[in-house]
Length: 418
Image (cartoon, rainbow, N blue to C red; front, side, top):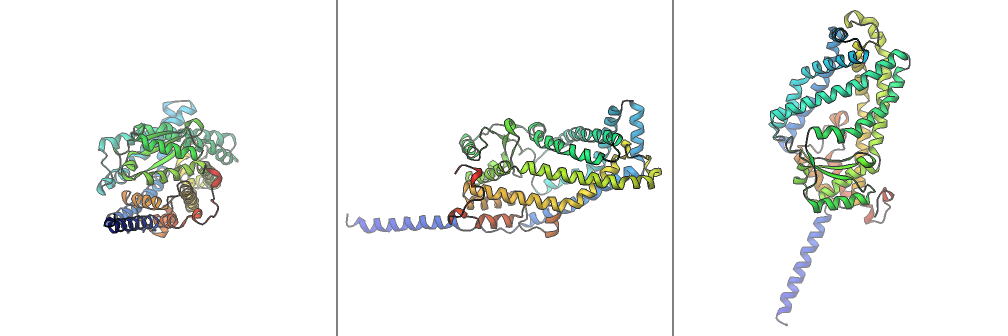
């Protein structure tokens, strides 16, 4: 025993030192990684494509107006049918098809060529084309569902149509938020049960703590489209669901995934979806009011070129879209700032429910690297484009937000079971 004691003491102190070092590393702040050259090039390319897509979309709407194409589409629709609703649907279908064709080259570059060039996708051309076709059908139906009541209100209440249409926007947008993850997303990818049942049980337990028990958990076969990672919580009452892309399950470890799920559950528990619906509805209302105030004057001045002289003519749809779109674009930075605030609060919720700061920071690093993100984006583009805080901001918050360590109250202590 005497001879073994020094060896025992040495082993004890070595083991203690290793455990202490591990604990210190677990509490050490996560450093913000510098972006790779590939990430910087991808970021610049995406910014250019964003600006081109924006300018092209507005230019196409102006083209349909100034060439009289919109009026010709209306004339064709009137020749094909007499019913107002059927005529509107034919107009919307032709208009949507032509605008989609004009946007197709840019969509191909942005959604297929660039993603393959930077190694973010292995999607086949056939799958991309099929997704485009499905998107066209869904887009046509949604556009028709918006256009039909707007023109009915224009005919019945020329002075207050924008107000009634704006009020109708709230249930319309809410329906889209509710139905898109349930009916639309499965049209593009296969939703199935999680393969890792142990992890599924832990996510269920986290959801129970957050007060959203009973939610179904789906694993989405997203790797056929992209190497990017994502997860979300969607639905309402009996339709609520927790969705994880198979790509995120491959890239993040268990602790990191639980923080991400805590973040996504935070969106649900804090009613961020409903808040976004309210803000979007307000922006739609303001955009339609701008269209109401400006479109009549534009029609009076350019009616010969437009081919219509009344706003309640369905041929005016590109004009309403153009003016409302510009008004919405002006308000976009404010909306982005609002959504960045919501994302920050979801990060706070995720940290409070998991209390795993290091897992949060490491998850942000992996999200940045896998999605070719830039931790410190250009400030102007950040204001104009970004709906999330920068990765550097999120890592800094994950490193420092630990109210439980000092006995301070949690902001969302009443929102989940401790």
